[in-house]
Length: 557
Image (cartoon, rainbow, N blue to C red; front, side, top):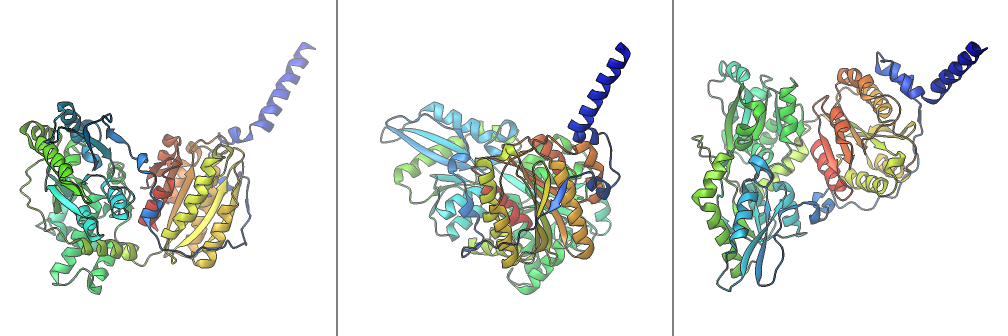
């Protein structure tokens, strides 16, 4: 009798486990294909037919999506006191971070401790805000926030600020010296020298166009090195034929180059990681200060300088008073001292590579270069993308509202020749919008689908990825000229359905880049996805998600 009772209890437990935790048991089974995995997923097609009303578009404008300036932290923030001259400075990340990237933070902190007074008897204090050069430019050019001074990585952003009508005052043309360069595997460089004895930017771009080299570079709307690279490539094509960079033959040559570029990265780290993991890249671009301090690049890599020097200039912004200009001059003299220049050298700046750099282009030409890149970067190959949106219960409230707003505003950055689909996931997966050309009708349907999002249920993120990858594969079979990508928007906390271990081999085989945007997310989970096929994982709080989605779509779509 006791034995029978034990068997009954065991049976009840087994039934409960099978009935209540099917998704957990399913994770013990490794599907052999996307199609087989699809058979174990609860999903449906509920395509939206309603068209939302589209407001007249003012065009894609990254500045319109900028978050509050407070999103970007003050890394040196002296206490406000009376009888003080407080000056705010925007600084690029490689000198306003921590460790080897913290030169300007340490120097500014030391300067403020000196309590230096000016002729009016006021104590000069510097508030240092860490902000990427491209983002700092957006704030200044749009007039949304003007610091007293701006020290980007190079002069290109200053020239563009001036071209947009904002006054500047040169305080220092160089705070510390840095150099942009192409990083190659030494084995790759040796092979190239057999065909191209002189390895410079012109020979490298020729090698890319001919298929002898696979190179990646960073988004020229955000990255100083990326913008420098873009301008240098266009200028090399123009100079070889004594033409303007706006000449059709220059843009045609650039398109041929772009056809051989597998992806334009959001960050240098994304490209470096691709090389280290044995991805498609043979080379990528990077600043020399980062190169010499990257332990993973200590051996086996070569650095070839290109473009203008990254002199980290310091420029006053807007109509400054004489007192403000003088205060910045005192600060610059402090940074000029041998003590702080030696510290900069210790951190990888000021290296003498025997490279004098190119001439700095005019601001108007730089703005045109960005426009050329946006129009021709896909080189005639449209993108097919699916947005995979998390509508689970953890996204309820401000997160789902931010998601809706970001997708709708971000759609302005999508070129109409690209193809877009939309899938959502919570406890189940629902395909909301089939992949199709992003004309006005499709755009109106996408907006309607996004407006209808409601949060609730569990988070079957990997089930959603399987469905989205399957749909992209089907589309590419019929439209092989498109470049597929998947963009996942989630808080990165899966609690149901398949797990990463189950689907990893299937996603690697599918070879579709998966960009992930996390809302105050479990980034480790999302980074695993993006690391599979040379994509990026982006951390976005609610305040900045519009800008970060806009930046991603501006680069990829």
